[in-house]
Amino acid sequence: MKARVHVMLKTGVLDPQGEAVRHALGAMGFDKVEGVRQGKVIDLELAEGTTEAEVAEMCEKLLANTVIERYEIDLD
Image (cartoon, rainbow, N blue to C red; front, top):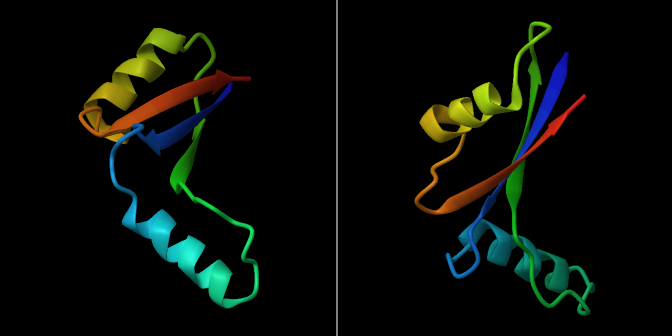
């Protein structure tokens, strides 16, 4: 069983890495990019029977800083 967790900064939290990417793209001539938000994707190989609630607990305890980040879980 597989799970993919998408972790992104919450709306309103400054994203200096995203801003650096936007600036670099502008310097490369991609001047139509108005904003960039950078996040991370975590792929988990799980034992059969692992629940979404268990993956959410993993996110809450380790994979995401829930003060400033939000996460989405895709189970496969």
